[in-house]
Length: 302
Image (cartoon, rainbow, N blue to C red):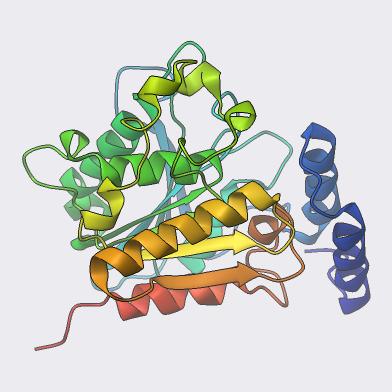
């Protein structure tokens, strides 16, 4: 790992604040450029990596698996669902540490990290996202013995469009299959959960379609509030305000349904993407919050 001094991190933090709430391709690229040198470029020590397990028939139905290289008991699995505006993104990219760094981080915490790709709009519109999330969860559970995974402790973590797909999977029971949702918990960072409440100009019509009459039935709310899955809800301090509103709508719906707020986290000093890019580095807030949530979801010991 190089250039990871406190001064460099402080400089990156200042630059992220200067960028502010702006969210476009240029901002996302700059955020990645700033953080990329801080992540290891060499193969991850102590982590076994298996790339491109197929979990379905499409060429993007692929999973990368990250495991600690030390023996141990059955471990929780953390499935990561990347963002990309419903039309882009990947589980890993040549020459970049992202999003592979999420799976590496998970394995170094004693988890089995699984990164997924999924089908993209406009070729694959709604409901391709929740269908693919469900297929990946079932693949993990079906291969739990091979992966040393505890099938009762499968968690899924989505960011941005990935969070929308995860929420849609949890909130629409038709995607769960005969075995139910199969999850011990879900983590949602900077996603959209209620299309009706969203500004129509920001709805990804290439994925959801352009008929507002269908937005309610394609929203994760209200179904996600009643699904019974423990949830963690996160948003970045410098997210565009629409993501803040969505996080609050979800938290409020969960409060109304369950009579208590979910674990709710605001990533101070971060924009829409930088909190995820900071994962595993000094001063990381996201990682410890994820681990705290997973511990809270642990079944009681005998």
